[in-house]
Length: 470
Image (tube, rainbow, N blue to C red; front, side, top):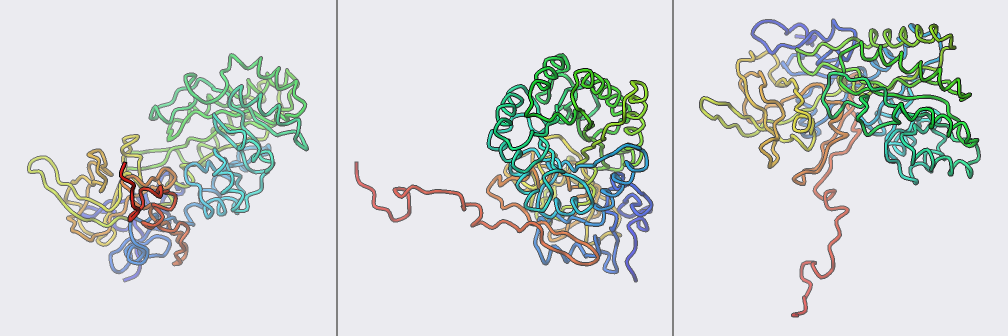
């Protein structure tokens, strides 16, 4: 029996999975594009048996499929080239998952990278990403972070007056003008979780549009600042196309106003926010369709205002990395509350995926070592942390399971590792990159020794230290 595409088991009586092999846009797939069921009836990703990966590397384990990530990068890049006649650049919003390997892959596909801290900037530079393709965001950048950004020659996306005034002072000592973009709040609402809406006026991010005249006047007077562009972002995990189309019109109006002030604005950064499929109920637009709507909107608005097409920049994060990763856990204890629910516990939870407890996020799961077994039970997948709210999935449709089975949660590439913690002093999991049957560690599993690496014990508290009797 040879490996079978996941789509082949999507029939009555088995664990249902969307037909990834028949879907061209990774953000619409629950499974990585390379997902298969092998002759052992095990889930296989990137040519690697997931059960074998857990045996080799332990669990919890992040499994990143290189082909799915590269496919998403290429779809964004190629779609902008197809639908936009001006210059364009796709930059990866690396807060979704920033590590050396991910930055290196994205850079090799010709994408830039959006960073939001000195640590993310340092990681991208260490991965070989050119400073010229790095864009530095954040609403409260420190002076040290700004110095680092200027030294790396990346573009600083200015968020507020304090930062703008600080940069104008720092630019005096710089060898060349500091390249900046101005972030403005567009006042566009979208249907997503309130914590990840950033485009409405009541947001901690960006200049208020009412301040635009004052901001443009100030920047115009600063010879040390090269104001190359304008930026806006309306949120994350968005399925609506209309909101992004509305954003294009607003931003071109800003572009026209900047031109009237004589600012050399030549880039528009429309942010990102395209959603992905976490469950069968999710229906996000394809990458291609999202790009087409954005490009058509900018083009039409520029024609209306008789403006040359700016360099168009987009910042996808979740839709690039989210579908490319799954997380494998080992099932442990079970508890049945008669007439209420059955809990199955896994060896991870909120420390490796805080999204369910933080955003009430919903996920889909399968049992990797029995992929063809009928999904006849509805259970609650609980994490192992000392919190009643540490629930990975409230209603998971699974076959009967037992201790030692491998549970795989899908679409975990975005905001899982990047938001992971050591809560309850659990070491953070390992991550492996899989491709064509090869698995490479890209994040080493933390050890108990790692947990106390930065602890400091005063000598008077050390074991065996004789304390004076006061």
